Length: 155
Image (cartoon, rainbow, N blue to C red; front, side):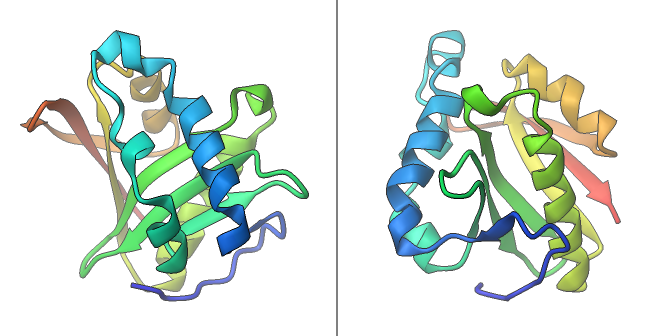
C-alpha cells in the first residue's frame, strides 16, 4: 500500500529511487553483524529495496547521507514494521528512537490501532530495545529457517 502520512520529524522522508543504493548499504551495514550469530543472512538484507522504495514502503533519515530507515506496510488492522536499520556509525545518536517515533505517527495517521514487528530470537539487543518503546511479546514462532519473536504495540 502506498498511503502517505506526514511526520512531525522533518528529517524523515519517503525514500526515492536515488536512495536505493543507500537503503541497501545502511541495511547491509546494520544487519551484517548478525549473520555469524544466527547462521543466516537476515531477511532485510535480501529484500528487493528498489521495489520497496517504489511502493512507498521505505522512509529514510539523514541529509545528505541516509543514516537510517524503516520499511513499513499498512495492513488491514495494523502497521507492519518490516525492518528498521541504523548505520553503525550513527548508533547512539537517537536515530532509532526517532524512527520508532515516526512509525507510531505513521500508524496513527493511517488510522491503525497498533504496530507489529518481529525479530530473530538471537538478536538479543532488540529484545531489550522494543519493550522500552512499548512493544509487548505476542508469540515466538519458527517461520522457515527463522526463529522469531513477534511483538506488538497498541497505540
